[in-house]
Image (cartoon, rainbow, N blue to C red; front, side, top):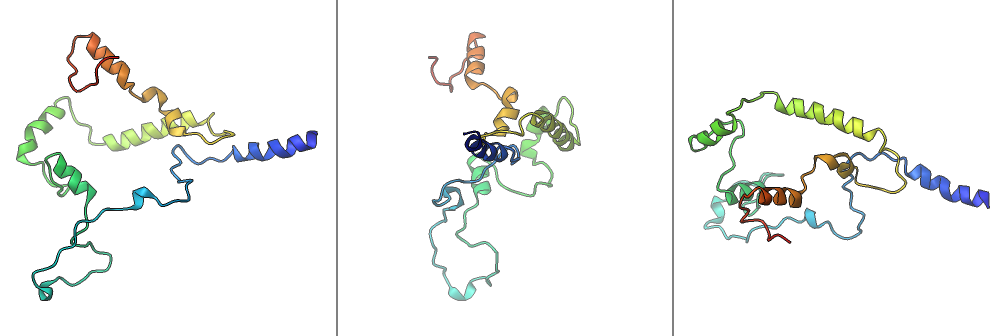
Amino acid sequence: MRKFALLFVLPVLVAGCANVGLRDLQSTSKGPDEFGIQPVGELQRPDSYRDLPTPTPGGSNRVDRSALAEGAQAFGGQLGDPNAPVPATDGALVRHTSRLGVSPDIRENLAQTDAKFRKRKARFTQFRIVPVDRYNQAYRREALNAQAEQNRWRNAGARTPSAPPAP
């Protein structure tokens, strides 16, 4: 009986030692990947077939959609060069957001701080018998509880017109 229990428990323990990182986003489904399907615009007939551009392998199609461009347009903006100067229409917004100072190496600082945080949090979460979402475990205390925050603002007397009614 002990040998049978050992044969059952040992593979389970060994399988729990796999370190797949914080976020394991692999699909376990055998069906199609719904996020791999990209909708396209309607086909268009050109005015003249002679004036069509030369095809470029790996290039974009005239009816291909861009999620980034559509998202920027939905928020009233447009995609452009990320290294271009700030448009004059956004000057007031940039001045307001940088009124307390700007750290030029903020991305590097945040990456280093986050790497240290994840390393510290991962010390005792590496060995699991069943797969778990380590991202939510590591950042549990960093997450915002939307309902508690909404109640805090309502109790302070602030109007929350876009929030759902209080239960």
